[in-house]
Image (cartoon, rainbow, N blue to C red):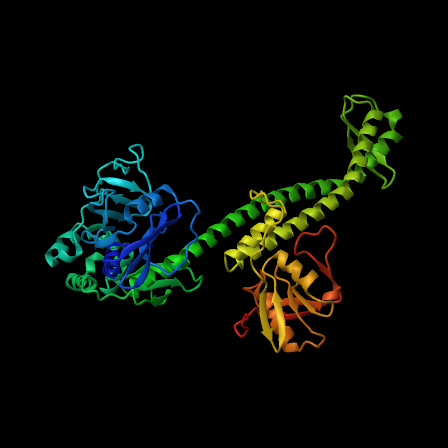
Length: 570
């Protein structure tokens, strides 16, 4: 969701509290993001501005940024021209997605001058541009050459407005004008976006929903006009209600607006804010983390899927070779029968029909006509011996391949259940350690960031591993021999440890831990999940086994539903 014109209009009125403020600090923590510290009326403000294609924005923020040791050239330019400057005005032309921040400052000769920081919020074409009094570009966060666009954005070039389709300003639309525009309308769902300035598809859908319109043929134009004018007049009078839409199932931050998004009620969780600034600050803080999480998760899945495809293909070939090796006795028989009948056979035969004295039947044996009968017999003996040697080797290879598939599939479960970036970075570190990802850091040992999940029940501590390395740590190093160990039966999932402290674990605590094991497994969406449990002393890790892979004995099984609403993580 991008900032639209009417949301930017509401934001502009809130940013007016910066007018008269002094610019004290400027940093550029990322290639397309800057933040400016402004002090006004004894208050400090942090203004963040980004031209990132997926998160272009401007708003006040409370979050902290990690700044580079050496500031980028654009940051140095802003410091040179804007530090100690006073914010003189914040402007917006109509409901366009461009904000102008005028700053009173001085030249090197101490002459007063007003410079303009132009913030263009336009998706992949977003930019941050510093201009002088004549709107000649001093510097910009993104250079745009003539090879890239007809609109050149470079230092020394006169600033030009981006080309935009002609749209009607929303505060000047009359009923008869609306009627004329609708007559030419082909798609009612995008009518306001296509014809009215500053209206996003999201707000367009909201207007149509409030007016109860599904198709233009049955539209009550007076009602539609009334709803539209009500929203615009409210925005102009600073009567707006910043609203955030959160996906009820995934928790993903989906959409936001300066108005209530009633058409999403029931589909999303709606959260309102006191200001557009606080809405944008939360949205982009969480959205950025969620986007990084989604991208990292996708990258890791792609790596694992690639390796799984390799393993599956290898397994198919191995199983075909094993099937042939299991049928190796026929080649020994062929060699034996040919040898027994050498006196009846001649070179050049393509087939030999020989009596099989083991079952009393005649068997047809293919022959290579270019070889003598004795050479054909030797060929079959060699084939038999080769397959005999290969058989046990194939069994070992198939077993190792299945273990690798099991390990990679367990990582898919870990990725699916990762809750934050640290969880995924731990998985990535493990994949680097196991050789599935090239280590570009040069470090031999990877740093692990997350900690196992921790629950309390009836005074007992229950720990749940988030990844294979944590599973190994909990089971092999953290747990004592008398502690209880739990894992879903024959299903990928977390290792769960109940710290016994020399006491007998009550049945209700065992069940709670089993529900955790079921919930943090591939069987999360199932019911009556079998969970094995045993004492830690009966759990062992085979030599050379992958992280998280163990064997266990003397276990019992409990059936539980993976529900943990009554358990609180500490």
